[in-house]
Structure formats: structure tokens, C-alpha cells
Image 1: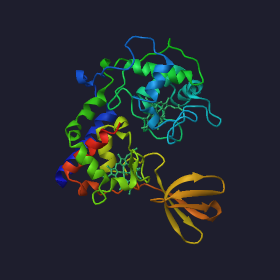
Image 2 (image 1 turned 90 degrees about the horizontal axis):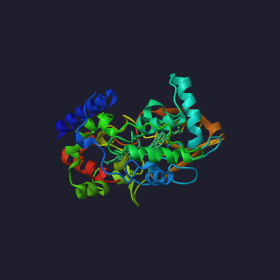
Image 3 (image 1 turned 180 degrees about the vertical axis):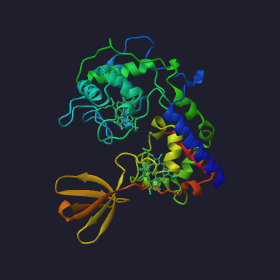
Image 4 (image 1 turned 120 degrees about the horizontal axis):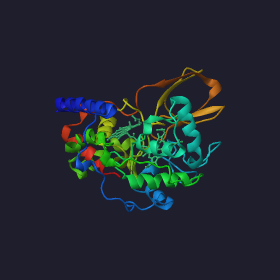
Length: 327
Ligand code: HEC
Ligand code: HEC
């Protein structure tokens, strides 16, 4: 069993390599997105994009828009603090792309790029965690992307269909689909058994730290919609190699105070005078900044690293199948 997991891990990293390098593979017909909520060819409306943003597109699982939505770990796309809403912000972002990368980009092209190739320009202070929306698992169609862009433009800016170019998925932009499909055999496990394992206190203990729906703990990110935004490969990595990439907002910090105490956890609130650390369960501790002698970011995740040797291949497959069904 352990050996098989090793092989899985190897395949995983090979998969990631392919993903990053992006081979010029001709995509299979199966990689063409399925039927869409937006009638093909029709002029997209902000309302259609809004429905996709708060529904099928799963954007709400990471982004809020102003006061709407509950997510705080990714850029708020409404007006916030000194920042204008995304429809207006796009122009200054495009200017920043030109300044930093020397590429001329219109505001509309910036929006399209932030959906199709999110890591081409990563907003300061955030990590490249956004999935490319035309690739698995989101697989939005070109018409859906247009509708979402029009909705984003309508947030503080003006709708401008004219300059928008969205490549059709059939034109070969879906290379990642090929490596994502390699995980399909492991996504054909038993959902019900995966759910039992996830919530079994005598099992791997996932629900002690993660919530799915109404049940579970809050030490790790909520996984209610994780299948809608994470590919099989990313899920495997999250479970077997938790420290390989740590979800934003869940970085661990070690804090030493004047009285010699050491605190390990994530900083959940901070102002000029103090910070609050959550270190597991409901434990919260607020420390005065004046009392802190050292503050060191840690490279390890709070999620335990030993699942590769604790889970059987069948366990992993059932857990993956269960998680990828959470959309
Ligand atoms: C898994 C989390 C996640 C999901 C799902 C997600 N995003 Fe993002 N998004 C991010 C992160 C993180 C960033 C900032 C890093 C970057 O620039 O790539 C970002 C950046 C953006 C930006 C640029 C914001 C700016 O201030 O310039 C836009 C626009 C955007 N996302 C739109 C969307 C839309 C529309 C969807 C749904 C189709 C979506 N995102 C889904 C995580 C996500
Ligand atoms: C002791 C607490 C703990 C346990 C037990 C735990 N996790 Fe995690 N998990 C975390 C934390 C904290 C993170 C965020 C940091 C990171 O990305 O590594 C995380 C991240 C994840 C992610 C990535 C989520 C995202 O939004 O990027 C997945 C998927 C995940 N865990 C699944 C599981 C599964 C499945 C189990 C059971 C086999 C499990 N976890 C057990 C704490 C835990």
C-alpha cells in the first residue's frame, strides 16, 4: 500500500510539472466544456455573469464583493478601503502589469487574463491559488467567461463587450485537462465510505479540523465547495503533502514573548498594538506587540504530514471521491 502511495506521489509531481510547463498537447474532445447556462453566441449580460459568480463559477468560495459573501482570504472584488471595485480597479491593475512585466494590456484584457491565466499576474499580498476557470474542474465555457467579465466590469466600471477576446476552449488552451484526467481513476471511489472516513473520529480525523456543510472543525479551511475549485491533483497534494503549498490565511507563525512563552498558530487578527493567534480548536490568544520578542513564519502546515503512510490507496481514493463531490 505504502509503495502504491509513493508511486501516486511521483505521478503527482510529474503531473504538476506537466501542468506548469504546459505541453502543446491537442486536447481530447472530452475536454471541451459541457453545455452552459448562457446561450451560446448571445450577448452576455451582467446578470448572467452575476448568477455564474455566485453559482456554477464557484467564485464566491474565495471572493466577496463588498459586503456580499463571507470569504476574506482572496481579494474582495467590491470597493473596499482605498481600493475601487474591480470594474474600475482593472485599469490600474493593467497599468501595473505594464509597469512590472512590460506587457501592454487593456482593462478588459486584464479581467480576461485574471480568469484564464490567473498566475500571469498575482495581486500583491496573495498567492497564485486561483484556478484557471476554463480548465478542470471549473471548465467554464467562453460564453460563461464573457458573462463573468461583463459582470466584473459592471462592478464600478462600464460594460465594454467590444474589446473582449476569449479563446474558445477547442483552440487548445486546455492542456492541464490532460494531466487532471490522470487522476480520474482515483476519483471513482466510494463517496459514502469517503464521507464516513472523513467524519470518523477513530479514522484519519479530517473533520476535527475541516468543516463540510454544517459539520466539522475550523482549524483548517472549510471544504464544503472544495471539489468545485480544486482538481484531483491538487486535492491529492493537499492531503499527502500539506506543507507543499499552504492555503492563504493558514500559514503558521511562531511567536516568542518576553516571559519566555512560545505560541504556535495562525494570526487571525492584528492591529498596531496586538495580535490574536488561533492555535487549534477554539483556543485564541491575544498578545500585546510590545511583549513579542520574535515572530517567525513556519514552513510547515498545521495539517499533519503523515497521511501518505496512514491511508490505504482505497482510503485515499474514497476520500478524494468524496471531496471532489463537494461542489
Ligand atoms: C480557490 C480560490 C479562488 C477561486 C475559486 C476564484 N478565485 Fe479569483 N483570485 C483568487 C486569488 C488568491 C486571487 C489573487 C491572486 C491572483 O492575482 O491570482 C484572485 C484574483 C482574482 C482577480 C483579480 C483581482 C484584482 O484585484 O485584480 C479577479 C478579477 C478574480 N480573481 C475573479 C474571479 C472569478 C470571476 C472567479 C470565479 C469564476 C474566481 N476569481 C474564482 C482566488 C480564487
Ligand atoms: C490538525 C488539523 C487537520 C487535520 C486532522 C486535517 N487537516 Fe486538512 N488542512 C488543515 C489546515 C490547517 C489546512 C490549511 C493549510 C494547508 O494548506 O496545508 C488544511 C488544508 C487542507 C486542504 C486544502 C484546502 C484548501 O482550501 O486549499 C484539503 C483538501 C485538506 N486539508 C483535506 C484534509 C483531509 C481529507 C483530511 C483527513 C485525511 C485532513 N485534511 C486532515 C488542517 C487539518
